[in-house]
Length: 409
Image 1 (spheres, rainbow, N blue to C red):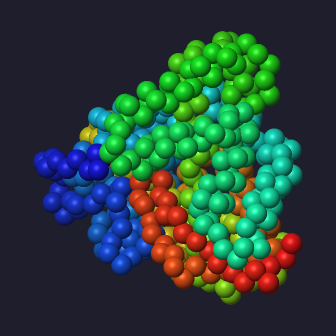
Image 2 (cartoon, rainbow, N blue to C red; image 1 turned 90 degrees about the vertical axis):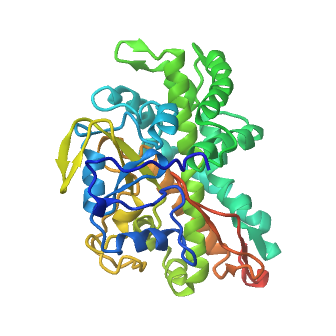
Image 3 (spheres, one colour; image 1 turned 120 degrees about the horizontal axis):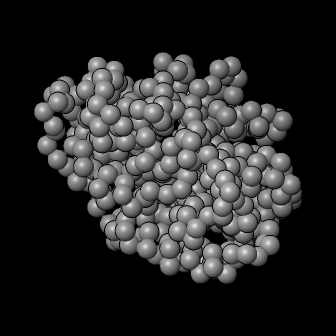
């Protein structure tokens, strides 16, 4: 894998802080994705570690510190968010996620406008209709590949409609997104960026100066201060939009459905009391986070007992905030009656995910429509559940099965 570049640890890193750990491949034998990260957190190691993998970087494993660093842009810059810094980090400097306040705010506002609760509520009926159509296509068959027939369909169809791009382009775009979030070494990061630009530049040129209502057109019509975006800025922003829209929700839906298939008692709580689904989603977000993101250290400093140097990278597995027993008691259990829920699943601080409300809406509509039609289901007997690590973790394609005679139209 192209990211697993190991180096010797620097002289300012104490030996007891060093662990040979690859954030892109965190799984231990016999453990699932979240269980593997939890095993690291429960290992008794210091809260801040250093690994020689992926060019060498710091790693925070406690929830409160993860949230603190994410919000502290003065000391921990978003200028670089991926490791290795010199390859992935340089290639993936996209707007607005790689800008710190105040520069990032005008660009972030463009995303906020199209992803606001008001805007998403206006398209909720169409999202629900897509969910229903997908479920009805396989409900009577008694089985489906959940990843390919639903999880990769609902958020992608919704998103491609929002940006007015053809569905036939999804395989090409999804492949490029995966090469950023879960690279397999077939393309360099620079090649991925170039292929994104080759796709987006004609789209931007064609929509520039027109009064389209899609998300890309609306961003092109809006100003950054007293000017419009340049073509380079627009393409850069669109890359971030595509990466966000074509990956994260897909994988979260898959983690949730694996859990519900294996835990009928919990599933039936939501089936029998659908009014609990909106609040239950926050607990599911806490339990099944996906993302590991980095920050670049802005100056030499002492932090939690270690000496950090300017330009070094520090990686923040948001997975570990919600799973931290210091933040959430009995953290590996899903408890819809939990009164206090702490997590960083959508990030923290100025770069909190702008698509959070859209993601929650898609998850809610999926659960409402699925459980009302297919209340009882299991992992298909012939199907194995596996996981892929990366900046955004994924569940490998798996099948669900049910007795078709018990479903409801």
